[in-house]
Length: 152
Image (cartoon, rainbow, N blue to C red):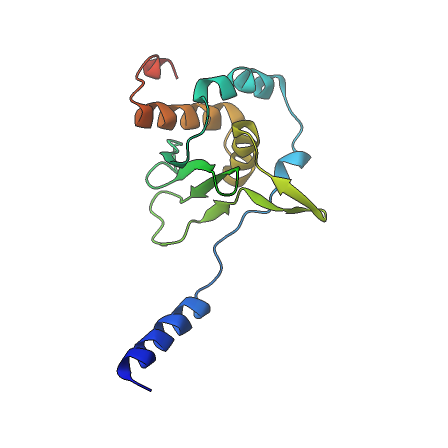
C-alpha cells in the first residue's frame, strides 16, 4: 500500500471511531400537555416565519444562542435543529434534532416550525414562548427584517 492509501485508511478509521451525534429522540413533545400560554405562543408562529428555503438560522435562545441553529432541509423535506449549550467545547451539537426519525415504530417527520419548536422546548427545558421568540429573532436576523424585533 502507498502512503496515500495509509492516510486514507487513517481518516476512515477516525471517522468510524467518532461517536454518533447526540440525536434527540423525536416525539418527546407528545408527552407535554399544552397550556394556554403554549397555544398563545403558537397562534401566529408559522406565519411569522414564512416559507422555508433551506439553510441554517440562528437560534437566539438564552443559554444556547452562541452556536445553535435551526432550519429546513429541502432534501429531507423536514426541519432540524443543532443545539449547543453556551460554552460547550464540542464540535458536535449537544442536541441534534433531526427532521426524520422513528417514534413507536412509525416514521416521524418534523414538518412544521411548530413541531420543531416543541421538540426544542423538550430538549432545552425552556418555555415554548421563549423558543418561538428565539426562532423568530434568528429568522428576522437572517432575513434583515428588523420590524418589531424589540417587541419580542
